Amino acid sequence: MLVHVPKVLDPAQVQTLRGRLAAAGDAWVDGRATAGHQGAQVKRNQQIAEDSPLARELGDPILAALERNALFISAALPGKVYPPMFNRYDQTMHFGAHVDGAVRLVPGAAARIRTDLSATLFLSPPEDYDGGELLIEDTYGTHKVKLPAGDMILYPATSLHRVTPVTRGARLASFFWVQSMVRDDAQRALLFDLDMAIVRLTRDAPGHEALVSLTGSYHNLLRMWAEL
Image 1: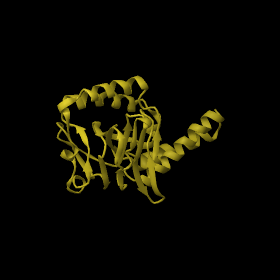
Image 2: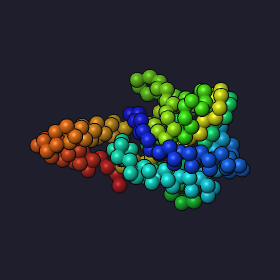
Image 3: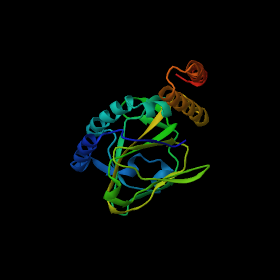
Image 4: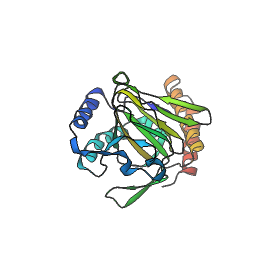
C-alpha cells in the first residue's frame, strides 16, 4: 500500500529545513555510511550524519508534524518512528534497486526498530531538479514518485525501490522508517480502507447509525492485530 501524505510540512517549515541543510557543511557524509552490504554497492548520495546534533534538531519538527497528521496515523498505525534522516542527491547521484534492512538500531538509544514502512518526505520542489524520481515496485508494477516539497510518500519497506540519477539541480529529502502496531501490510491496508470509509461517512452522513457498527469493527480488528 502506497499512501501520499500531502503537506506534512508547510512552506515556511520546508524553507527553514532547506536553509539549515544548505549550511550544514561537514555534517554531510557519504550516504554509504549507513547502508548495508547490498545497499552500499548501489548507493551514491550524501546524507547528514545520523548521530549528529543537527540531524536530531531537524528531525524533531518532522516528528511533531507526524503526531498531528491524521492521514499518517491512519495509514501507518505507528508504534515507533525512526529518527528522521536527511539526504541529498546532486547531479549524477542515484540509489540503485534495493530493499531496506528489516531491523535498524536507533542511534544513541540502544533500541531496535522493525522497518515495516519506509517514508520519504520531499524537501525540494520538483521543478528544482531533473531526475531523482523514487521508483517503487509492487505487485501492480512500478510507481514513479516525485512530490511537492513538504509532501511525503509512505510505502512498505519490503518493496524493491530505487532513486533515478539526478541530471540537473539537487534533490533534498528526509527519510525514515516506521514500526507499525500492525506489521502485516494487508491487515494495515484493510484497516486504512475501513478508517477512510468511516471518515467519509462521518462527513457525508453525520449521525448515521452504521457509524457505531463500523467504528466498533475497526477497533475490534485493531485490537485483534495490534502488537504493543
